[in-house]
Length: 212
Image (cartoon, rainbow, N blue to C red; front, side, top):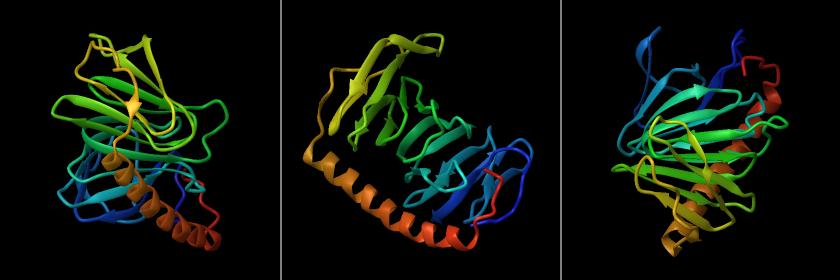
């Protein structure tokens, strides 16, 4: 990972598998590699059998994985916010700034957290949010004008999930995650845990990084 300096807050690419393209008005299209920096407004396209891991803080405590065949836009780095157009995002958030939240928004829902591990999917127009940790997740529907419908709030406890069929509808009543859901979540968590152990060793030798 990079040790460069930058005036504005950036998201850092921690690892990449396969082909991931970032598109911005300033740089056009570029293939991402470890250590690259992303700015608010960058759009990400993750290829088949590919993924990218992004950090939102200089200690690499708050990270997301954009899974294969995902299209998303980085809305902001702090507070972290991603616009998921299609695909799957796994978030592992261990050290958010005090009183801050992390959001993943889709055309149909908003998932808001203050520290947890969770999965957001948006496939064929349907959004699904799954809680893979003990911290609650607050899920909201989206109004016709695209704003969060606070009145539709659903709280997801551990090992629960909810779905939103389309914009304008509230999240469904939480149900227990299936065995397949649990296995998929466990696989992601173990993979990320292994990578985090590697990143922690790297950060010990490159602590002076102020671009995040």
